[in-house]
Image (tube, rainbow, N blue to C red; front, side):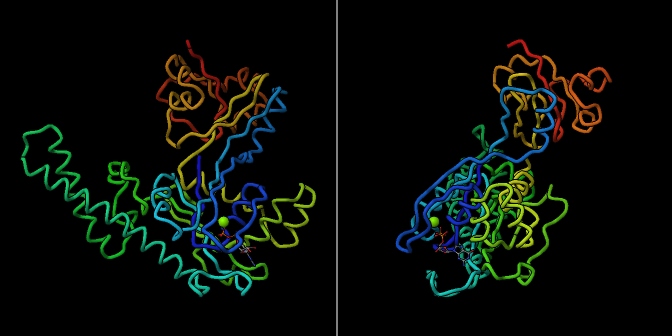
Length: 356
Ligand SMILES: Nc1nc2c(ncn2[C@@H]2O[C@H](COP(=O)(O)OP(=O)(O)O)[C@@H](O)[C@H]2O)c(=O)[nH]1
Ligand SMILES: [Mg+2]
């Protein structure tokens, strides 16, 4: 799973990158658009510790999320192309005050910054739609004499339907249904990407004062979440060891570090979940799409395991906890043998039987 930080110059992207990854990348010197950085972080998952107690493995391997700190939006044309390649975007906008940090537009107005970003994304997507519409109008003129004709007509219809909405500034997320989104996924439209927005507030600011919509309880169908965060404090927090961290969190009334919150939200926004494998060599968490089947989960581990798939031995997480170990779960007949089409559940403990 990969998430890219984007936003205007000096909004605190690199600060947030440090907060999320524990890195100590140098902050902006207010000259250029900043450099690109990337780093992988372990996904915190208490279930791994639980499994490790059972297996006492040589190695415990958490799932990983990669964060990418992209050069500032507005800094280069290359930006839109880079953003298009990302699975999900984390937008960072500035709400912290102070004259020490310049604002590229001489204003501190995060809502306006978000609107600018959104407008540019809509325009980029519109340009892409226009190019494609032109092309399809040319090719479909030939009539139903070629194989792709029907598909192209359908695609053209969808694109012509969303074009006026884009012209009105409406992101594609709001006009395409999930099926259409899937069909048009090849375009990598910017306004279709799952997005987490971080409003970067000052150290002394109260997040509640920003009047943001609450994060929904059920995130299954959500592709947009907005949070107020104190980026600089979070970056300091990320440099502390466990003990100091707990004190710091309490002092600033934070329930958890930003990293944990962002990772959790990212799983939800991207429709991902974890499954677990255990053994004397390694206990490990893996990431797979929600709704993925057993054979798709096997493929995450290795394509050979998917190819030679025979059965998946599965213990659901609640059964695992209730029984206390893989062995005990087997004895209690809580281990199920599942076929290729079994739909994986979050926290499933799995062993794949395969002929690879
Ligand atoms: N007061 C305050 N300053 C911040 C915060 N986040 C970033 N800054 C400052 O803003 C400047 C630009 O930050 P940086 O992370 O390099 O911004 P970027 O250009 O978006 O990567 C630095 O001097 C930071 O110390 C914040 O949450 N509060
Ligand atoms: Mg930067």
